[in-house]
Length: 78
Image (cartoon, rainbow, N blue to C red):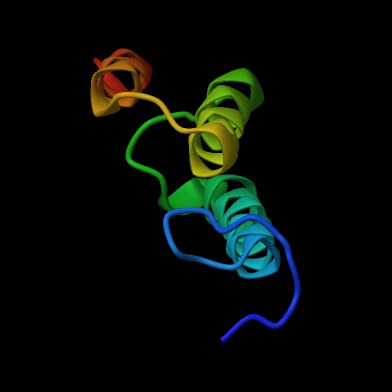
Protein backbone atom coordinates (compact mmCIF):
# COMPACT_ATOMS: atom_id res chain seq x y z
CA UNK A 1 0.00 0.00 0.00
CA UNK A 2 1.26 3.40 -0.97
CA UNK A 3 1.57 5.95 1.85
CA UNK A 4 2.09 9.12 -0.19
CA UNK A 5 -0.09 11.09 -2.60
CA UNK A 6 1.36 9.96 -5.93
CA UNK A 7 -1.14 9.22 -8.64
CA UNK A 8 -1.74 5.55 -9.33
CA UNK A 9 -1.61 4.16 -12.87
CA UNK A 10 -4.48 1.69 -13.13
CA UNK A 11 -3.91 0.90 -9.46
CA UNK A 12 -0.13 0.57 -9.87
CA UNK A 13 2.57 2.69 -8.27
CA UNK A 14 4.21 4.95 -10.93
CA UNK A 15 7.71 4.11 -9.66
CA UNK A 16 7.00 0.41 -10.19
CA UNK A 17 5.69 1.09 -13.68
CA UNK A 18 8.82 3.15 -14.46
CA UNK A 19 11.08 0.31 -13.29
CA UNK A 20 9.18 -2.15 -15.46
CA UNK A 21 9.45 0.15 -18.47
CA UNK A 22 13.20 0.59 -17.88
CA UNK A 23 13.55 -3.20 -17.89
CA UNK A 24 11.56 -3.31 -21.12
CA UNK A 25 13.99 -0.91 -22.79
CA UNK A 26 17.04 -2.78 -21.54
CA UNK A 27 15.76 -6.23 -22.50
CA UNK A 28 14.58 -5.03 -25.90
CA UNK A 29 18.00 -3.58 -26.69
CA UNK A 30 19.66 -6.77 -25.51
CA UNK A 31 17.53 -9.13 -27.58
CA UNK A 32 17.24 -6.94 -30.69
CA UNK A 33 20.84 -5.76 -30.95
CA UNK A 34 23.20 -7.71 -28.70
CA UNK A 35 21.81 -10.95 -30.11
CA UNK A 36 20.96 -9.64 -33.57
CA UNK A 37 22.25 -12.84 -35.17
CA UNK A 38 19.38 -14.75 -33.56
CA UNK A 39 16.67 -12.53 -35.10
CA UNK A 40 14.69 -14.11 -37.92
CA UNK A 41 14.62 -10.76 -39.75
CA UNK A 42 16.69 -7.58 -39.50
CA UNK A 43 15.52 -5.13 -36.85
CA UNK A 44 16.27 -1.46 -37.27
CA UNK A 45 16.78 0.91 -34.37
CA UNK A 46 14.05 3.33 -35.53
CA UNK A 47 11.39 0.62 -35.48
CA UNK A 48 12.45 -0.66 -32.07
CA UNK A 49 12.58 2.89 -30.70
CA UNK A 50 9.05 3.62 -31.97
CA UNK A 51 7.65 0.47 -30.38
CA UNK A 52 9.35 0.98 -27.01
CA UNK A 53 8.44 4.68 -26.98
CA UNK A 54 4.82 3.79 -27.68
CA UNK A 55 4.79 1.25 -24.85
CA UNK A 56 6.18 3.91 -22.49
CA UNK A 57 3.58 6.44 -23.60
CA UNK A 58 0.69 4.03 -23.22
CA UNK A 59 1.91 2.95 -19.79
CA UNK A 60 1.84 6.47 -18.41
CA UNK A 61 -0.76 8.29 -20.48
CA UNK A 62 -3.01 5.52 -21.78
CA UNK A 63 -4.85 5.24 -25.04
CA UNK A 64 -7.14 2.81 -26.78
CA UNK A 65 -5.57 -0.52 -27.58
CA UNK A 66 -6.38 -0.04 -31.24
CA UNK A 67 -3.59 2.48 -31.81
CA UNK A 68 -0.98 0.18 -30.27
CA UNK A 69 -2.20 -2.83 -32.23
CA UNK A 70 -2.05 -0.84 -35.45
CA UNK A 71 1.54 0.24 -34.72
CA UNK A 72 2.59 -3.31 -33.85
CA UNK A 73 1.07 -4.69 -37.06
CA UNK A 74 2.90 -2.08 -39.13
CA UNK A 75 6.21 -2.60 -37.34
CA UNK A 76 6.21 -6.38 -37.73
CA UNK A 77 4.58 -6.62 -41.16
CA UNK A 78 6.54 -8.33 -43.63
